[in-house]
Length: 217
Image (cartoon, rainbow, N blue to C red; front, side):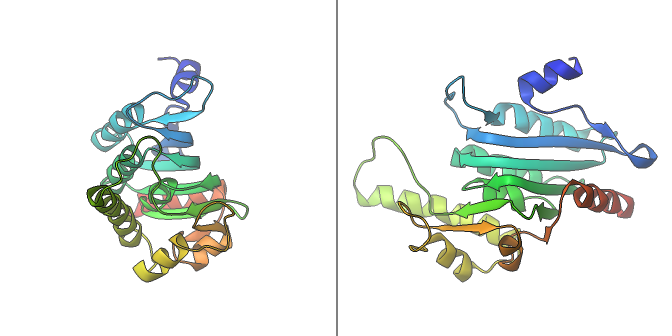
């Protein structure tokens, strides 16, 4: 597939040839994480059916030595986002993430799934409990299921970052920041201070860290 065609269809370029012949795969997580149903044609989406096979190819391809994940997402489907995060976390090759405009909701596990994470000074991360749209059956089993989903997400974030579970829960249940919801918005350095992101930096720092990790491997 031609480079321009791949950019238009998948929103991501071919792997880049870096210093000393190192190949780096670029993954862009943009717009909304699309689940089992297609979103509107005018919506920017990240499709898990494209991303998961690409990540499998990264693991299997000996010519690819590292993964750089560029994130600017409003969140989206929980199951699909968590599946992508688990795939990234299980790679044997070095990976670095960079939060640009924002990494909200299920974008938080995606941001922490790599070996090292960066956020630009103006980047934001919105942390809130699981939400669901559509018809919901108002029984105890529904709320138990919600809690299981929330536990999966929270456990993943804590396992792959430096934030404590009690602090993460406090950020999720904050009532004084969002006008119509509970949760917290962390901007740049705040995400690092809370232990969710490793460092404030941009594309230069992200590439430097990835090349350093690849050299060590």
